[in-house]
Length: 413
Image (cartoon, rainbow, N blue to C red):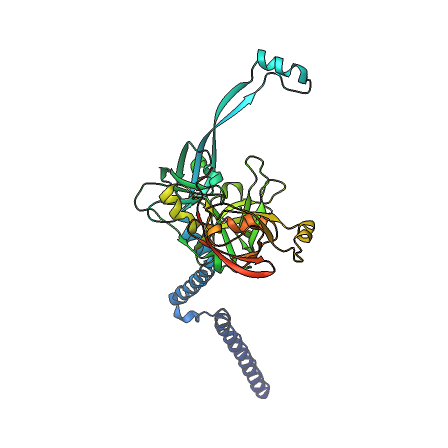
């Protein structure tokens, strides 16, 4: 009996021993769970108490700061730098139109004169308001925009991005380049830096900024669209619906959206420099379709002095009239190469006459650029200013020569 009691006590001890091992094992695993979790999350063990919470929050804030910093890229910085100098331009114009009391499908040409005598057409005057954008280019308050934005303006209001509104004074315009200069009077005016459009690279970032809503909607924040430089030195002929057709030469093409109210605003590079003035778009439905054009800023720089001094851009005069070379004309002149223009006339006393250009000469290039049509000739002369020297590569009697002509101011109508 005593032996059985001893065996029972022994077995009971073994049972308690095994239970103790199991309990220790479970406690051990429980104590290690938080440590493994902390290691996986990059946190400290819970033994540090409140320091663990502070460390985790600090790590989370640091992660958010890193994301925010990555969002502020070159495009954001450029928009922030130029945005305050982008203005809204509101223009009041007077439109005069004529209405005849007898118009429609039943008009008879025979009675038109009679009706006009008895019931003359009425003329109406209507004030209309239009808007566009512009960019302040210096601390004196000069605003660069498009000519078509301020064309026929009787009153100009300039609204800055900070909400200030000023009366604008039209300093001068250049309809050929579709550029205009407006001035506002104030101190502490933000202005943008002008870049070099000759250094543009096809494919680099292009940022179009405009401010069309500031005056009417009291929303002074500029709009920003982004694309790339699609092409350089484009030449486009306008449709001329409301004005005479004209040639837009040496334009920057971009796929950054240029909406109607953004005309006159700046085209900016990733360095925050103005590289062009947004001018027009090609569109079928009235909206932006990824084909926009801007006037290079270097062309604007070239006329700023003229606009400030004369209020206009003086017309450069060479005194040459040209004619395209047709096959029949080339055959009569015994010329094999049709790539050029024939000098049809030289005006007396002109710079061209003084440079030795003669009637019958063949112009092959202007400043190194080939010319084969009258459009090429117009495009080449659009950016020539009074005092500029133009080099013409000529051919006379089968021999080549170069004539350097200094452009003078045209005094006629």
